[in-house]
Amino acid sequence: MPTAAPPFERFYEATREEIYRYLVRLLGRQSAEDAFQETFLKALRAYGRLVHADNLRAWAFTIATRVALDERRRARPEHDLPELAASDARPAFAELEHLAGTLPRTERAAVVLRYGYDLAYADIAAALGSSEEAARQATSSGVRRLRKKGVA
Amino acid sequence: MTLPIELDDRFRSAAAAEGLLDVAYDVADSPIGPLLLAASERGVCRISFNPEPEAALEALARAHGVRVLRSPRPVDELRHQLDDYFEGRRRDFDVAVDTSVLPAFQQLVLEELARVPYGELATYGGLAARIGRPRAARAVGGALNRNPIPIVLPCHRVVGSTGSLVGYAGGLERKRALLELEGATV
Image 1 (cartoon, helix red, strand yellow):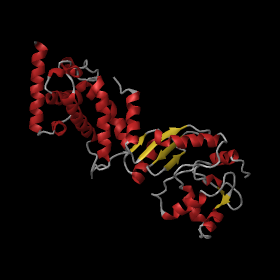
Image 2 (cartoon, each protein chain N blue to C red; image 1 turned 90 degrees about the vertical axis):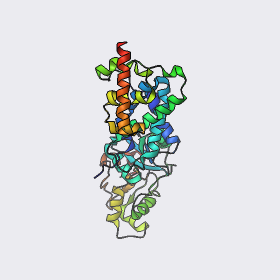
Image 3 (cartoon, each protein chain N blue to C red; image 1 turned 180 degrees about the horizontal axis):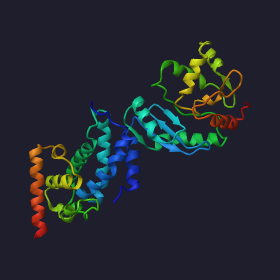
Image 4 (cartoon, each protein chain N blue to C red; image 1 turned 90 degrees about the horizontal axis):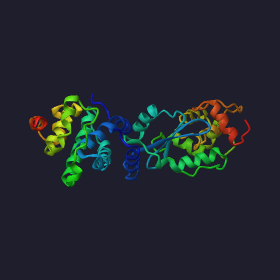
């Protein structure tokens, strides 16, 4: 039986910190603030119509990713400067993440979702609005690009 | 790096301001302990003596919809009026209440209950008679026992036919404290 959605407060408390850090990683602190509010207002608009609540965490990342990609399309270059690596990232990824800002935006989101937040490829695909195969490719080509930059 | 409090507050205010919430709630201090205050778009829908939102949120979501969020602004007016009430500066509440999700009989009982004046006592049997159901004192007691909006809907003013306090969802001590505040003689 599908799980019913919990009161929005529960969902918000469970995801807000992680989503905020994710948006800061993708957009930098300043743009992340607007994107944060936009993400949760979008979530709230859709929340009453959710059919099930089986993977709300991935759903939150999906909304945040779409908001962030829109934001980056609008953003001026100086807003695109990457943040320093966040402390909760995996060590290997954290060493390279400061370079992630130079990746094309979908690759960047794919890499951060996969290695920063452990999301499954199916969920990354949903977040990017692509196929699972395309999500895999975006992630691995992003990682290849990062490694090249990392050793260069 | 943690979410800045201002950003959290800004979202909670925006959610209410854009009319996206089924229920907004907050926790307020009072002389009889912390209170959980909740309002729907229609009005105040819950005052709980148990300030731990755990159980209350689930119940609110079931009754009114899942978009339940802590957001202080929609309950600010209620909070001010309660402060005034506890300071002895207010005798009647002037806030809309939302009883629309309750069974019809309970709505009827609560409507009649709202007419019991400050500082005066009514009995279960008396209320039953006033709604034209003189033999339904027990059912009236049940409806009052599940009053979702105590204090504003003054079930603390209803006592047994012998004048005994009988019961109160918030505990008899709170019932006694509210009646003393209002200067009612028990």
